[in-house]
Length: 130
Image (tube, rainbow, N blue to C red):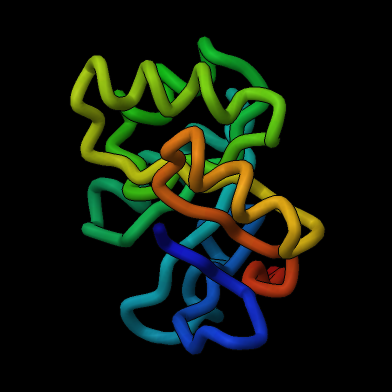
């Protein structure tokens, strides 16, 4: 299980950007985080075209399918979608890893039991202003 943002585990942060210009303010080889929306498609396409590692936050199953089709490396989901989203990702052999946004470390065990790829705490996502 992947764990991002936990105090015990050292790993790279995700950089939440709102537009293409903000990407240039992130460290080299960063993972860029965007909330999936039609308004962000230009930035999403820029990231994938330029080989930038992309994490997309989604809110429903349709957006999950879009995120996979847009070549996201990580798809960040709310906890209530965890089991269904992971089943779909496994069934369709997504390349993306499913990360559940968690608030408390007590959620890790429950999510591990249902087999999600990983979890991400809020402090693993750094907001970048353009």
